[in-house]
Image (cartoon, rainbow over all chains, first blue to last red; front, side, top):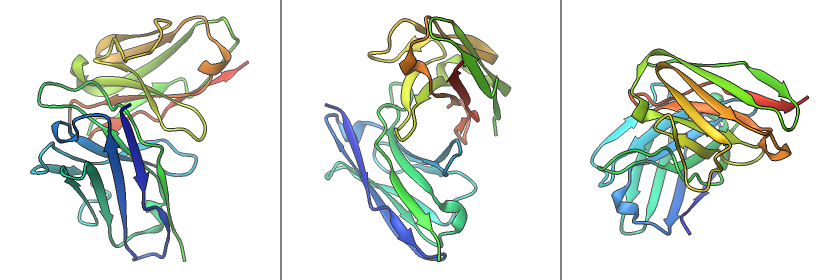
Length: 121
Length: 108
């Protein structure tokens, strides 16, 4: 079964740091682009970042550039999101999602169950 | 940035009816890079349609996508109770990847 499982969320103070993980199974992780998407309470979906299959290319939403860093360990089938200088507006459920391969894009599928990050004093 | 505008914001229909959801882009989107997702409360989004009109694995044929350029449509036939949810369109043509604000499909 193709599966993504996030972990690492929690309560953090403004200015603090957190590292999210997304463990992948059931597919060849090293072949796929991977993404992080977040959803603030009661709000819609916001794409955060993506990384290519070998980790050499990354992109970020302007709102997180310079504060959040995406990375991956293909040997461990795990995607990461290092979150620094966190702000109240970063409070959200963070989802990881599988993207496309070098051969094409077929939507974000699957998604993990999400992990909640709350930034508050 | 490509802005996706979904309409209506909320759609109230009865089971058995047909739902038509619209997604309009601020600039042309390659049909290869337009997707639709369904999200139920407390759950992750689920991919329904990719490439504007291709159904994802396991998605019943009551769901269909169409459109090109700047105007895209998701149609859901014969609404069932489990279809009432929030639906999002997404474009992957240009960076940053963007989502529409969502259409809430509610039971009338």
